[in-house]
Image 1 (tube, rainbow, N blue to C red):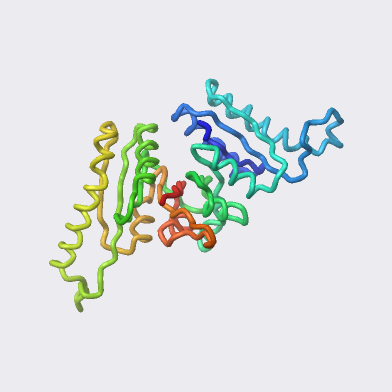
Image 2 (image 1 turned 120 degrees about the vertical axis):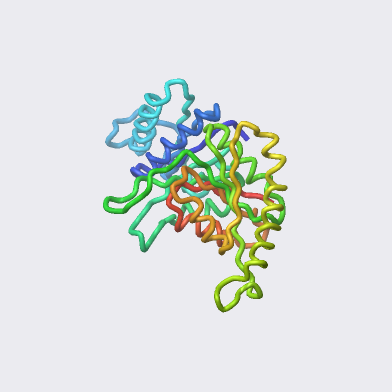
Length: 289
C-alpha cells in the first residue's frame, strides 16, 4: 500500500468538491494525492494527434484542470494524475487497495430522495479493502444545511473489535486538530417499556453498562492520542437514528463495515446505510474484521 489519498474524478461539480476535500486531507496527513479518472476507451499511451481526434484529450484536460486548481490551493502537495483504461468500479476498487483512503463524491438530490450513491459508488463502498470517504457536496439551492463544525464523529457497536474504526477516527481527528465524539446507540428492550414510557431503573442500568463498555473501548486510544479531546455518549434509541442525530453539523462521520467473506454478497449494515443515505455530512466507511 502506498502513502496516497486517491480521489475519483468524473468531471462533475461533486467530484471536484471531493477532490478539494481529498487534497486538504492529504496535506494534513502528509500524503500524496492521486487524481484517478477511469474510462474503458482510453488508449494505453498518449498519442501525438490533434485534440479533435485524440480520445484521451478530454480525460487529460479534466485531470490537468483539477490538478492546477489544487496545486494553487496546496503548493507543497504532491499531486499525481492517473488515467486508467478500465471501467470505473474496477479501477476504484484496485486504487482503494493501494491507498490510505479512497475519496468519492456523494450527490445530494431532493430531501425525499436523500443520497444517490450511483451504480459505481455503492459497490465500491461495499467491497473496498480500505476506508472510502463519501464527500457530501454543497446542498442544492433551497435545501437548508447547517454549517459543519470542526468535529469528527465515530459510531461504535461495542461488540467485536473496533480497532480499525478507532484508528481511522483518531488519526483523522489528530490530523485535523479537532475533537472526536464517540457515540453508541442502543435500542430499549421490550421489557423496559411501560405504559408511560421507559422504566427509569432499567434505562439507567442499560446506559451505565454501555457507558462502561464504551469507556473501556476508548481507553487505549485516549492514551495513544492524548492530544485529541474525546467526548463519548450513549443514546437509548436505535443505532441508526442515534448516529445520524449525533453527526448533525459534524465535519465527518466515521462508520464501520464488516469485510465480506468469499462467496457472500457484500452488504452494508443498517447504521452504515443510514449514515450514507440520511447523514448530512461527509461519511467515512471503514472496513473491519
